[in-house]
Length: 177
Image 1: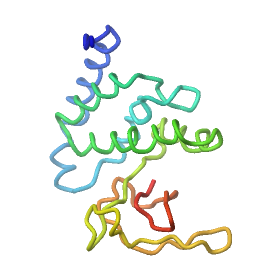
Image 2 (image 1 turned 180 degrees about the vertical axis):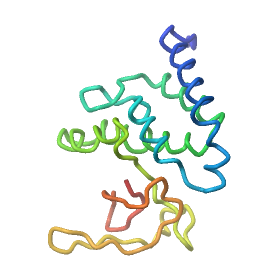
Image 3 (image 1 turned 90 degrees about the horizontal axis):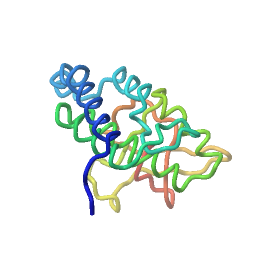
Image 4 (image 1 turned 90 degrees about the vertical axis):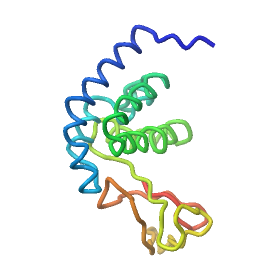
């Protein structure tokens, strides 16, 4: 396999490195001390195309390849691992899954706000007494007419204080988006 970067990859690395040094590094200690990401920075990263990198432009993404995504993750995570995790959750756990496995309606509804920084995905896996053992999670979603009643607690479901959409399987919530 040839792992030589293209000119576009080299330019992406330089751009990501500059953003990391100028925008993320100065905030890294504060973010760690607060134990919560900087939402303004995440919105700005979305506006710059970093929150739905591999999603086609048609759905509000940047339309980049996986190598570009990995390059950006490396540069961001070198200076601020917390921000790197948030960018990773948006791209890998949410945007990529909705793009690859979602319906056309879901792609049009959920991806543009993520791609332009107006929304951020979160992973709500960890629970009191269960840790990250998905099989031991206790949060439930019970259908009530056209709504669901969500009951349970999640830890570390950053960056969001309010979650608008939930993903569930068999009425047991293992992730929040």
